[in-house]
Length: 610
Image (cartoon, rainbow, N blue to C red; front, side, top):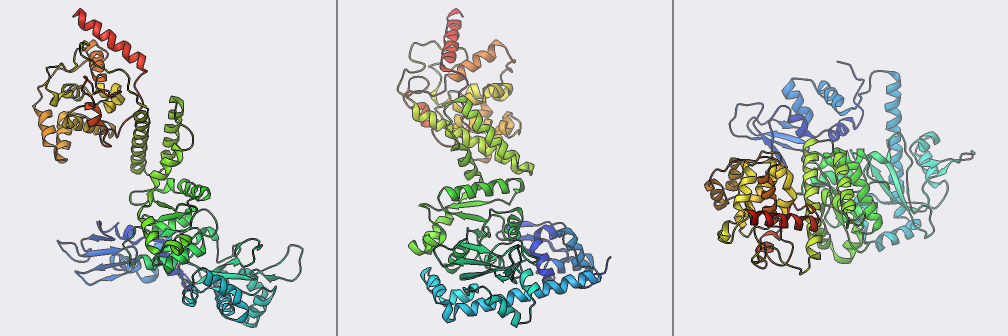
């Protein structure tokens, strides 16, 4: 075990912010999610009923059977009998953080960083003071116009940078900071050609940026003049601050989130949106710093809660930002870790919506947030027209390429199934809307092929025999999956058997009567289970034989393409299969209409010969 010189200020808080307690504790205690907490049996006592709780938002554990509780460091100390320093070093290794060692260079680094923190804090206090001084009149007017009172200024430590080239520099120098420290803190800049340094922020409303511990490390400034370039200006990257690793309001938001029942933090696009949300009662709002979300920022979000909501303006730029976030997030999705999207309409941002319609309108918008998979589907669906087989194939290819980015195999498989299902649904709705009122299938007097239901077959079980043959001869499902999804069975229980058959096949759960019967029973569909169980055993249909061909032709009789049902009963097929569940797995047509008609004619001729 190495001997660190000392733990720097804030190191422990940053360490705990990087580690999710349930991940560490879950390696020693079998935890089960219960609301916002994780529950398990105590590792300290021999108990039979769970009384051990872990709260990731508050970053603590509590064992009610023994009275032991604390943070993740305390848990490691208790369970592994380590000292505080040993536990910190162990967790730091896991988090990829390096404890400083006992070298003069590390001592120097520690002292330098401490001075930079102090310099940023002194600048923040100066900006706050200037906002309330006579020179801050214009800034106060701007903030009041945005609906922010003096109380809000104090809560968010808002300030004003005087419109002068060296006022901030001179103030900080009067507090004992050197020009080198002021520049290293990102508060002053110098032209490449040389010359005296000057204030980075001038004539701007100031938003202090803090780290995970709440210490000021940088600033954002909003220009007050209409021609201010740029409108928003952030500190440059420094030893303390890297804009891709920080979220505005993160510490405050994480603390507020611990007392909510939400699934994650709210992410908006700018300082004012985050403040407006917080003032309206959504204290768990944060904002990136003028860039698309980075992997580091996503990590911060997921450490706070599993399902953060990204709130974007409902315009083209907002959609582009949402799409960029999807690309960044896809490789890192895991069970219990995703994103939701709140896309506001009419080009509004959260601040606009709250001021115009109030907090309840914002709450309603958040409650209608879309899951990542839905936004991904819409992105690819709307990329181009999908009115030809080639374009439909392109859509499927894009969807599968997006799913392929997901590293977690279980989530990847779930996305593939979901995206394919959405595509089938959409294509079916397109075809359904284009249906005309042409000729009917299976009109009276039309000969039926072998295996097709005869007019004497009870309507309530029509198609049951076809499905049982597919279950007993599973290779039929492989060659006719699309046709099965489009088949219109008049009886809902027969249609239910078809639905379970398809879902079992697509999930690779195995297809046999027992599996499907058990699934039907678990869904409470006992009649469908009884129909399947009572159907007599039949010989298996051989691949590539005449029986297989006749079975396919008979199945196609059930595809509802016109206004009439399969055998002239108007609407009988549509009544069953137009429900979302029945049409969930719809895919493209098995073959062209002419080819199908030719097969039907050929089958009819065969029946006549027989």
